[in-house]
Length: 200
Image (cartoon, rainbow, N blue to C red):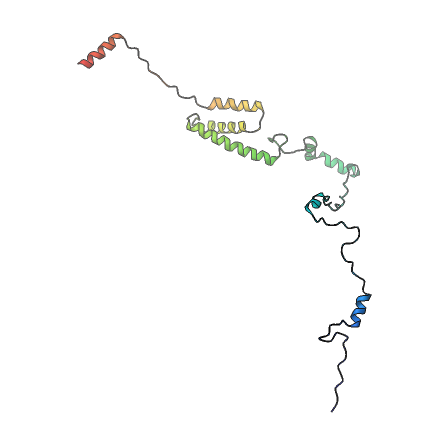
């Protein structure tokens, strides 16, 4: 019978043994050592709340450089004339806010729309109160004029415009009905006649 050859040693640690193999120890000794702890020069983390407060704020990383702007003198004369001849550029050069008719100065278009909606809501509330009191006429044109005047009075308009709205309100509203009092002056003869009728 042929005898089997003993198994080759793979170089590893046999099962049950606690010692490391020599080849592993040699590789670990030749490998560069990993630094333990923080590198030199790094700031230490605060260990207390007072140290955390005293620590300076974290600085943001440097932002990316902005692209260079193309200046006016670098544009060709033909493009420059075309740019400044347009109506939109002319409006922006004069007011810097084109297409903002009816918007108060220093206010954006969105804020102006919200202000007008709020003024219209308040105007409708006042209109209903005056309509219940019988001060609003039945004419549809007069009712529309009054509602518009109430809305403009609540908006941020000039004093001149508000006075014009007040004048419109006074022209179109009804006067309150006057109470009639019947005053009868009775003479002595009338008083005697009433007594005689009661006695009869």
